[in-house]
Image (cartoon, helix red, strand yellow):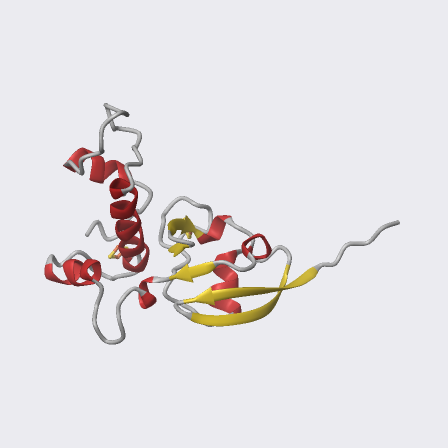
Length: 159
Ligand code: FES
Ligand code: FES
């Protein structure tokens, strides 16, 4: 009977730092980041793809890391909320969350910030959302559009 390897070595670039790590094939990208690499900016909320607290930017798109196997993302470029800024300088989205008092406990915030950055990029690239009425025009970030595009990120504190 053919046997399959249960572990694999994968390479990830996380916030500009290259890593090689050996993981069980069943390890999610979230657990690879948090438990194997000590990258704790993405948070584990539901572990079921429902809350968005584990969101990062992966190869330029927002990604729910608890829903993907790390081995399937071998070679990915990952940017977490901790890697968005330039050194000590905050990313404009991080600053906006501070300025607008956009959090309470902060548990969901790294995912919210990454998702918000991804949302702006998606709108800029002309990608429609579920509530975009005219698929032929550039999406405008109305309140309804922003609500829909951020609806995958839940805040337990209701901040
Ligand atoms: Fe990934 Fe909730 S922890 S969506
Ligand atoms: Fe507490 Fe969102 S600020 S969960």
